[in-house]
Amino acid sequence: MNKKLVSAIGAIAVLAGAALAFQFSGASKMDENLIASRLEGRWAIDSAITDRLEAPRGFVPPRGFEFNKDDTILKKLIGVYPRFSSETIFLAGTAHVGTESHWFVLTNDKGNAHLVLFTPTTEGLTVEPHYYNINMALSRDKMNDLLFIGGDIARESAAAYSRLLK
Image (cartoon, rainbow, N blue to C red):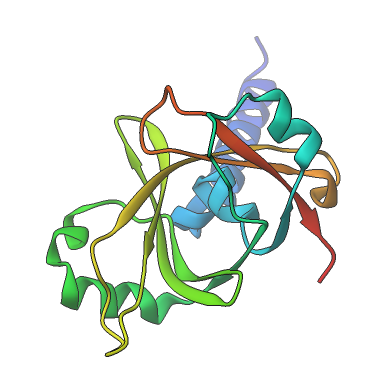
């Protein structure tokens, strides 16, 4: 084989590897997690899909959520709950559920995505965390994504949410 051809192929391989490494060198945990990269924004319950999921009697899911990224929340949260410093947190911020504002983190448990909501007390401190399974069906158009938030165990039914315009 021609030495020039072998050299050219080698150079292309090195450049391709460098380009790939450069592309992913700045990836953050949020970039690596599909839910974290698309969770921000306003979501409203999709009653038709939620009804198909056959929630248990008496289950009344929130009518909607608004998720806002806020990196300062994680630092505050670790001050109150140091155990979260050893967990992989993909996203942290504030979740608005109706008129209430909650701190939240997106993490995982045994490979399953978990939304952890912290309810504030009147003193502004957080109380015990509440864990929920969270999943997302992605669309080519971000506005058509579907969000599923369920109970804290896999057998519990989820409620479905559609994205709202800002």
